Image 1 (cartoon, rainbow, N blue to C red):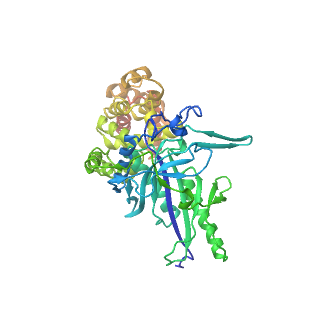
Image 2 (cartoon, rainbow, N blue to C red; image 1 turned 120 degrees about the vertical axis):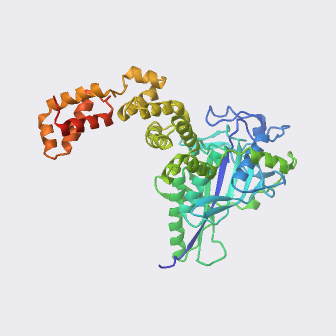
Image 3 (spheres, rainbow, N blue to C red; image 1 turned 180 degrees about the vertical axis):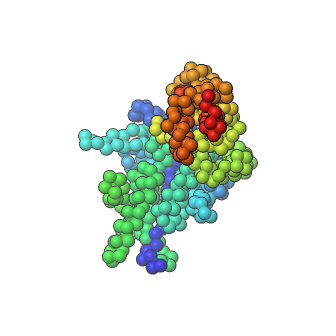
Length: 478
């Protein structure tokens, strides 16, 4: 195999909004959306005489993130001011952490024994949001002051695919740790990617380019693949890559220069004078660790042990913690983990995709799906009826037994009654009977279908098959 001309080096910076009802340094209510500029107070605006007050819950969630990602939690940390002018930063500075972040080091598992190393995780406040239109630019300060953690990866990823896996696993871990919902559509997770190229074996990093405007993990991968090709072409032709920030244009499938890349000294950092240093007792860290929700790897091991599911099922079910919790409730409720897994992976996930919603918003609760599967397992409804019942319960607030009665879905399992139906079908289908005796197995399928049709789909399928074979093979159709 030919050695590549250049080695790719990627580092990710991920901003994650913490799952809080108020902002980082103010009691101002915070939630995504809402009327512009209605969730902002004098503290975020930096009016004269106001002082920030640290949200204790934000510190706890940031420590939880650090523990989930195997970081070292600092015993004494402080905040700094990062100074820059932009319309969505009304104070003219951002409170963040530079020299003494809350969490140092850590790693993100990438699978197959690989890890993406972290430099740090620190707390900082968010800026507002600017939007640009033909008539001008608008600023919404609702987001200003929201609590963020910035997760800074080491520049040790070597491919866009590794970067994609880094983000996928990071999101999953933070969701399971209940640190953030990590919803990119709502802006609660945002990613900037840094990429450079160098000759294989070189120790010094190449010139770094930062990519912004990345709205999905797939977009991050595509943007990095493009930038990888662009930089290789520049270097391969003897040119020099410019240190800059570039915006990704998804429609055109390419990046474009935005501005020169700032250096740390450009921000004139200095210690935040209105916030004292923060001491983190080890006992407090231990208490947060003890209360940590179950993380993905631990839940996977438990599901494999308790439910005996194959790896494919575990991959699908554990991708989203809410889906995993839903499945677990169904599995315990119906006593058949594999049946529960099959229905969640097919009917439930299909419905969520069609409706564009989360399982937390699904009208059919896990307890009702478990009750539905109990009816199926007990033979009181067949699979076709179960699917019809599933669809009905998505739009009707009924108990399972009520819905079965309303739809008339009770399965016909009386052998004597079903035998009369089968005899009638055989008497009315002499050609199919003759085909069966001539060795044509498709005739059996046709007779089965006619029997199910005659019972309105309510017949017990296994019993119908049994009766058909018995009467056909015995020749007793009187």
